[in-house]
Figure 1: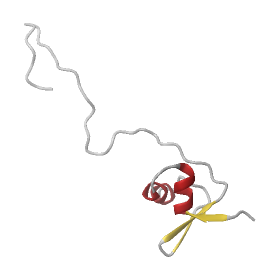
Figure 2 (figure 1 turned 90 degrees about the vertical axis):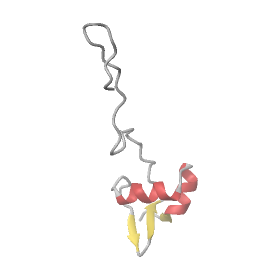
Figure 3 (figure 1 turned 120 degrees about the vertical axis):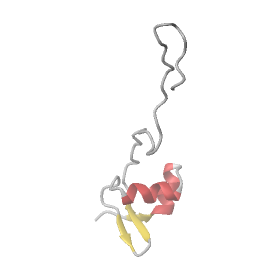
Length: 77
């Protein structure tokens, strides 16, 4: 049987915030994590999930200015 630890302890082990561990659990990134009331129980041997580096919702990717055929920079960016 595998042992469980609180999310607070995993946050210290992985050097991340408690909230980040809670989000990993909520989003199913930690296999075997279970919620008891308001506390997450995480398997003691669970590997740290990797972050994907996605663009946050509501953010637009940076774009380069466009130039017209006359060589003048367009006002839209």
